[in-house]
Length: 111
Image (cartoon, rainbow, N blue to C red; front, side, top):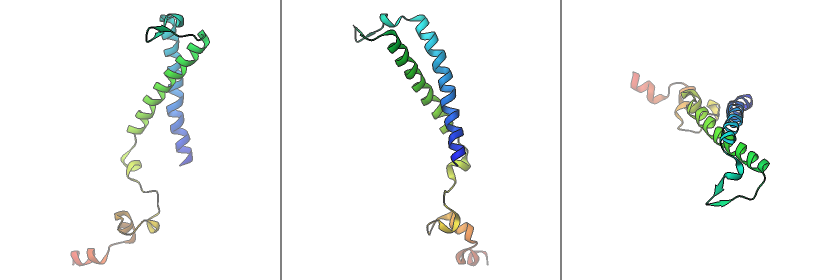
């Protein structure tokens, strides 16, 4: 389970990092940081701060996009699996009853 989580984190973080680098390169090739304004007022921060904020903003958007893709790409088995072993599942759980074998009620119905 832990290896699976680490793998999924890399599926999310690494592509987002690559896309953030490309997006920042394209964005700041087209726009000079000192020409950008927030609500009409110029921002009083250095170019490096603009580049850093831009990179982390693009990386955050990429992480959100990749995380949504990984979340929606889960198999039905992953979504429906129960983290508990059959004997430790609560009473009334269909998966516990299926693991215990046919119940008396099922035997009466089949007879």
